[in-house]
Length: 242
Image (tube, rainbow, N blue to C red; front, side, top):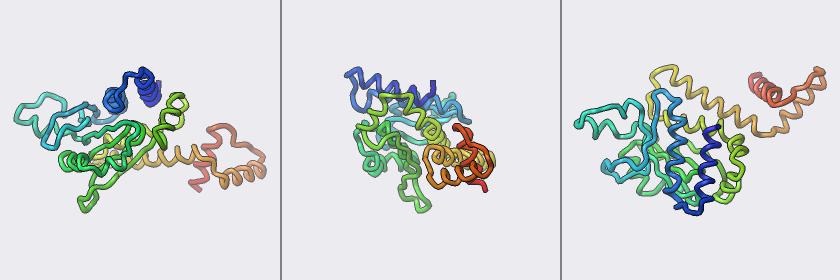
């Protein structure tokens, strides 16, 4: 099953139990999503919930690279286990992540860990620093506009995954690779391709009247049809490349 569909299923099952605490009961489900996607990366990335206090409090989680989790000496442990892909701050689905992203707590984590992924399970904000070393929201993704619409959409996990899975997974991959230095041309090429895939998926999900009119005119003039998803995609991509 698609990892995003599994994620939505598990969140919904926990909520339906009637025993969930609005924030912490879902930690494991979020960690499972990160780990499922993180194992496809090089280096692999793993989420650990409630990491040690390294001088700025206890983050809800941290994103570690595989090499960090190998055996290290006690002398190396304090430095080497600062999560290479940043800390995670998790709130309940009703919280405003934009407000949380500017909180004293997140800014404290930012100063210690370099970047923080803030989420309420439906909205995700990667907080980092700009060229002037000031806090900035680097990249965001939203599964729903509100808590109500999120849980309503979650009643159909398959449909929700169909609408979001490809783009959401690309987003999380970028988050888990973001601090990696782009020295290798292959890494830079991957990031550019990831943004290109995200742009293509955005185009595929939107009905563009202007392109529809052009497509109809071409079909009439050439005596052919752009049919089905592949036909519509080929037409849109081809039109953008002209």
